Length: 94
Image (cartoon, rainbow, N blue to C red; front, top):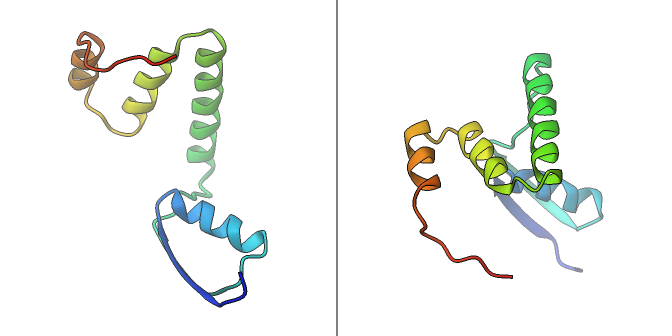
């Protein structure tokens, strides 16, 4: 891309925007809104534990448990997760 680029990104897209800069995209101005970075040790440890648990659930072919854990982690109320797990509301494609 030869032209200068102005880039705005929010949340996890901020990580992708920074990666684009690292990869050499010609960015003149970059604005990030709430990228998910946290240098707090307690938060980093919680994230590492979450990552390990998600990987273990997926490796054990327990994808619905992995989705439930992700939803709980992102703030979905337990009652909503309970209801979703008991309702067939989506099709599975193979």
